[in-house]
Length: 302
Ligand SMILES: NC(=O)c1ccc[n+]([C@@H]2O[C@H](COP(=O)([O-])OP(=O)(O)OC[C@H]3O[C@@H](n4cnc5c(N)ncnc54)[C@H](O)[C@@H]3O)[C@@H](O)[C@H]2O)c1
Image (cartoon, rainbow, N blue to C red; front, side, top):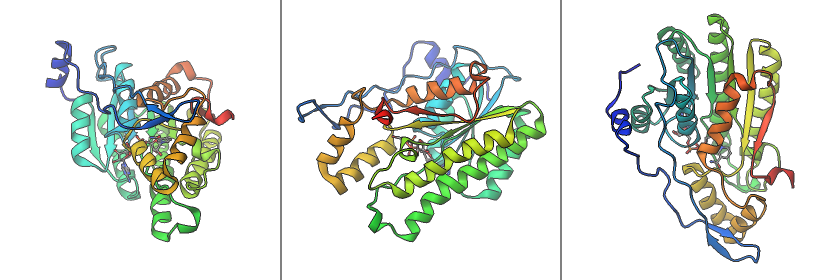
């Protein structure tokens, strides 16, 4: 791992990074149906010094780690003393994120199965351990069912499902070979649990990922635990895309209806999802496997 980086030194002097997600114009419906501004919680600065990582600390591999939920999960694990390897296909964002988090960057597209296998083997060799996979890289498309085309369908399947499967398999093979066990946390979605009229394909990929979580939990027990988180509305660039595409298809009314279904009345922060992921990765969740945890502000119960 690189020695103490300039950003880390700055942070020790009290520096805080600018919010990664600024206040936006997203509208949240009030009980009377009008819109009030949605309060967006800034991304907290990563607390890299809470528990210092050493050369023998546990290692987490986080796909889609350059931003959003992956970045936040990596930050949460770093704060708990993990060493983190970030993987992403966006090389520029990946380098930035790795510098922010004092993590190892690995450029990889999860749809390239050969590269995925070589990457995980390289991580195990170089870091000497592999204790956690955060299987997070994903793409989204909001599209009426009757308008889905083959290339869009294939893209969602390739990244969210085939990519996630082979990343999981490659990580599990390395964990088994290293002999220290491990934890795999798949980032699924509430959309994999309940139907949305314009998210059939996205929902199918996430429903399959929830099933993969159970199949892998059984196949890889007792030494490797496999879990999933199912967020609903998380303030990331993907969420901005969700809102934009839902507005384009269903107008403001569709977005209002979406928020009206969330009992907690707001979107989730990436840090809130990351906290659950860090818990699942920890020994505090040592007796959990095969579960898919709802992080939907209560939306999934109604
Ligand atoms: N944001 C939400 O509301 C929400 C809700 C439920 C589930 N999710 C899931 O959470 C995960 C992360 O979402 P996010 O909101 O942080 O998204 P995001 O778009 O902000 O970040 C996704 C990251 O994944 C990377 N990525 C995409 N395709 C890749 C590929 N083929 N190979 C390697 N990296 C790739 C991107 O470059 C990006 O850095 C996704 O699986 C998404 O489906 C998000």
